[in-house]
Image (tube, rainbow, N blue to C red; front, side, top):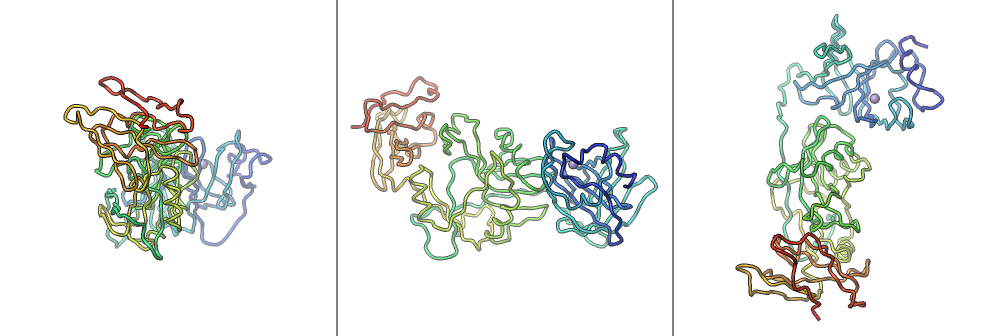
Length: 443
Ligand code: MN
């Protein structure tokens, strides 16, 4: 056994961890590996084959991708060569407990080795292809704290990309689901559209208009870093709030629900490279591979049968369906015909079950037309409900109201009308000027 591995072995119990031990000599091209290690603190382990073992650094922000960019790389104990193909679960209670996944691997050329131990290497991997330097940095006084930096390639012009932002692609409202081949269908979420930028282990969320939503949806930002199997990516999705029944609900969002989900439906950039020019089918396939199971960040479903999804959306009180052409590129900021949205509420039968008087300039006006294709025009306010067959209850039709309406703050739930005496609306936060008034049964 190599002496170099004594610290590695001291830290681990070979009876309790599936990690490999032992070391064997090779005479092929030296290898490198980068492992995503979801331990107590998520990091990426960068390893280079050196003298029969893997010299190792823990890189909290992942390997930098932009030329000139540098990240902290904490020099850790050498690992056995076999660790280069290790993936799996290190059980609780063991050193480094958590999940190890191979993020990239390949061979490398040693371009330079400095007296102080600094290395310059050219990596030939799937994701990492280029030149990086490992620099012992004594800035903090801790000799373990090195830097890893991406070097500019000789003879090539630097891509010189500053981290860029993306304007979300928009859907065109239509009446009917498109027919024919080449479409996929997704639920239309009713929350906040947000593009998620993950870079160096930190996430930022920007709204459609470029407003920073990171603080407001801090839990989403935090979980997005965990959910992505890579330290650098840009995704598109919708932050939704869940009501007590676990349904997506805009009114729950308005009430400040802290139970949030991020429904991710597109990938715009991966490992520093924009992918918006790829067809949707390919972007989705890559997105699926990049998203790990997470309680908050979820892959928004994609379906082949648009009619079935539309029916389900109606039943579940979802806003509608978005149809997307599978061959389409991502058109920034564009309301393209490749994405179509079809809303459910315009086609619902609903009952008027109460109303309030309009306020101010709206006073004296009350609008309400029920039935197919109907809409509750928002003067005062009508409370409209649709039957929810799955839950066997009536859901208030939140889309019947203007965005600023106080009834958005009510819990949108009614008991089943079979027991009319028990009809009630659970009240949410009362509006500023008092309490919601004049709630009455419509019939
Ligand atoms: Mn590690």
